[in-house]
Length: 437
Image (cartoon, rainbow, N blue to C red; front, side, top):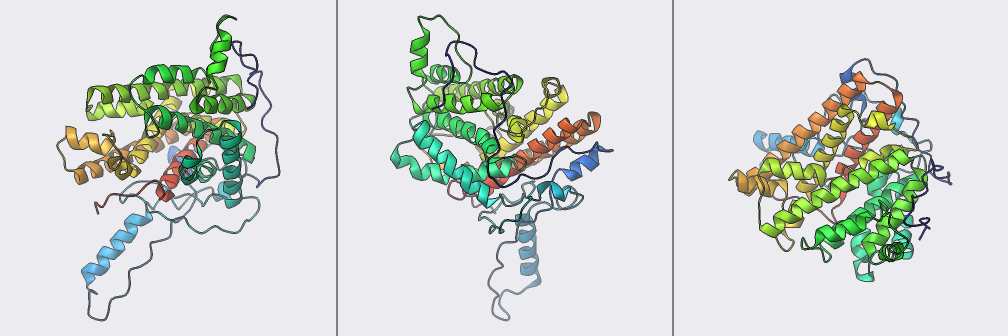
């Protein structure tokens, strides 16, 4: 495990050196986009032209059997739905060179999995298989050797998470695999806390606040007297989530600026507050109103992941630009939309799990007295509205503040949103869609 420096004192954050380059697949070209003359122009340029292949056509029926015009039209409509959105912003007016690799690895076959029908999303290029393999190898070595993250019987679940594909798809502008690993370790550590403290692997709402607070000191150091520092230091190795948080954060602060590290700590505090709200509702059996649930999800969401896109990209969005209200709205909407994606894809997984899991379709069904199918379809509409709002807010900000770093950061957040959806769509180990269509 990396040395964290003297615990109980300020961590070493004197503008650390970015990760050194290693032999690696070169990243795409710089994302320092030129100023865009219109908001719509920037919005159209956010997404590369990618097409998800149509699902295999059904077997051709025997002559005279089922070959009616209505059947043909229905098949075409289904293909359009499964293909995802088209039109401006998806397959046209894109800066295609931003996603072209500097070398040309053999194309990987398209991953399995279909998108939620009717969901508004943007297809992404297939993640570079060379990088995916290397990130997957390194993160497993870190999990097993550096932080002893999981017992042997959980290995299949760790592999099934496909975190290498996830992070490569979400950070297409990372200069090196070392940069990608900054995000990958943090993602795995966050999931360890969620699983072991809140969810599947021994988690419980009872006593969650105390566990989260002590784990949070692994990323936001405890400053106390000499007498009590050793006990805290020892606690950081007492369970897998804290070991993972501490190690992942140690790597991160060495590559991040002090401002970026503090930003991440703030977003993790938001995440932990959202965990606690959901736990409180679970303890009291409360089903929140839909708006209350969405408010909780603004905190218990993916926000810490896209907001480090500049660190992973090897640059910094200055603190004053990150703090702008319009930038904060963009980041919040990105987190909200991506989290509803998770609700939709994990719906059947959560229904099959012990206990009652709150997700948007479940809350809509109970609070608005809708059947499961109608509630799920309404949740799709909620996602689509949030996704459109995110894109409109990003485009407006690009027009209001067309600085190269702002434009690059906005593009990075948009890439994370798109990559997050693609991982959910393709991770058939974890997710399957309900039979509502």
